Amino acid sequence: MIRILDITKKDLIQLMRDFKTFLFLLIMPILFTVLFGYAFGGIGGSGESDSRLPVGFLNQDDRWVSDSLHDLLADSETIRLHESEIISASLLDEMVAEGELAAAVIIPPGYGKATLSDKNARLIVIADTNTSAWITIEAELLSLVGRLDGAARTATIMDEFAGKRIPFRYGFEQTLKAWDDPPTTIIETTSSALKETDEGIASLAHTAPGMMLQFAIAGLLTAAQIIVSERKTRTLQRLLTTSVRRIHILLGHYLAIFSLIFTQFMTLILFGQFFLNINYFRVAEATFLVAFCAAAAISAMGLLIGILAQNEEQAIAFSLIPMFVLSAMGGAWVPLEFTGETFQIIGHISPVAWAMDGFKNISVRGFGFSSVIIPSLALAAYAAFFFGLSLWRLNVAEEK
Image (cartoon, rainbow, N blue to C red):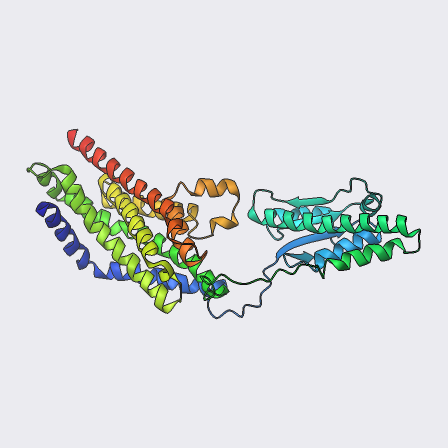
């Protein structure tokens, strides 16, 4: 145990000599978090931007029923209609493909007649069905079309029983208006766990953990270079010829890297809590557990990079590639909720995704301690896997 701590102490002294780099790894995530906060309205934003999903609209039908559907879409709290006199189906398709629109709705000729005659009315919708935006849009369209269909059927029944004394269109319009004043009112309130988190803070609570994790991985370069330097000066080879067990050598290096990453995490968590008002401490022990397990996983990755890299150039490449790839996959740049289901599954190959889940379950979603158990176990599994791989690689390398 003493020899393990001696190696840890030696590495930490060497790391502290490069204090400017450590300071850089603390300042950069703070800077990027603040910049992203301004960019997405998280800091100083007016909160008045339209967050509804942009949906193109083209009406090719001449029935008043189609106009009623247009009015329902225009009043939607989920959809923001994009209309133009020069719009066409091909132009809408192009705008959806280029990401200018989340989807496009086209009312084909005969839609109104089919609705009124209780036939199978069809809408044309252009969208990428693999995104979460489509799920939201589809649910809203089904709701509004169902409302329209229900009004048509109710007006038909009224027309039959009233013997033409109530005009069909009047019954239709009155039924639609009834949806605006339902007999049951749902009172919306915010969970007490989330009342202190406004839109701006929620935006920062998405961004801050991502930047923290990304620059923690970037910090592995400094840690990996220590092992590379030991190999270059043959210090590692001399250690391997002593009575010190290889696992103890790795543990010594690992604890030093872990101390660096965990200190970075806790410093940034404290900054986020007290200066950015991110509610990390709503369940403090849960945030601590996620930070501990995330630091353990990333530190083990740094250990593996140090063992694999034969020189400083390789250490740089092996550190920067995981930083970009794992950060992008894991939702550090764009929340995985905004991507399709398939990419969300693929994204969880990255330990960053599990760490993001853990931090956001507490600070954004308002969940309890139990919500971080699975992410923490996943991160612990990554730590064990990377450490085991490092030990195996060291044994193989020295046997050659």
